[in-house]
Length: 160
Image 1 (cartoon, rainbow, N blue to C red):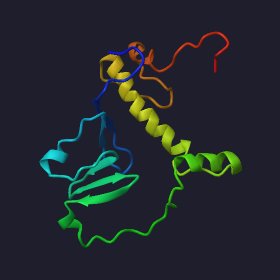
Image 2 (cartoon, rainbow, N blue to C red):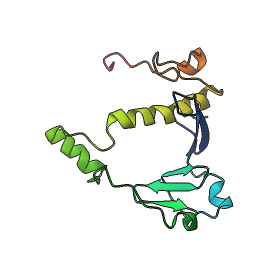
Image 3 (cartoon, helix red, strand yellow):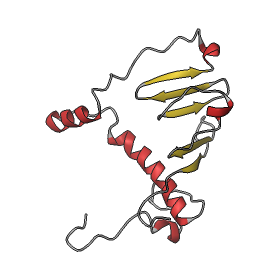
Image 4 (cartoon, rainbow, N blue to C red):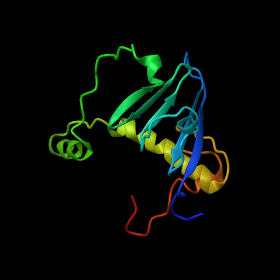
């Protein structure tokens, strides 16, 4: 295990409790060159990066470059909902525009912060060598061994 980085690949399972009318959610994160079994078992098309959502009636492959409902035959008559999110001008251009005029980016921190926190907690579990539970209100796992990976001590003069 490298003391400062994640492994070349990992598979992390996240479990979210039911909330209100929403049932529990199981999310699996694949990092590196590992792919979900569905790619081989369901003869999915080559897909370099992005997300695979697996439902009871089919799957959605999605990335910045496009999306595909699978199996295609089952969704040939599917009517897409109207577009509600404006097309991105690109990460770099969005960032420059936000710096210049204060406009929000498509993947602003309110969205991207929670996503980054989630996948980084996979690294905390990996480095601590155990299953963890996260309390977003307190910002802790409640486990001293795991919590040591949540923060670092900065050199004098470099504190945040």
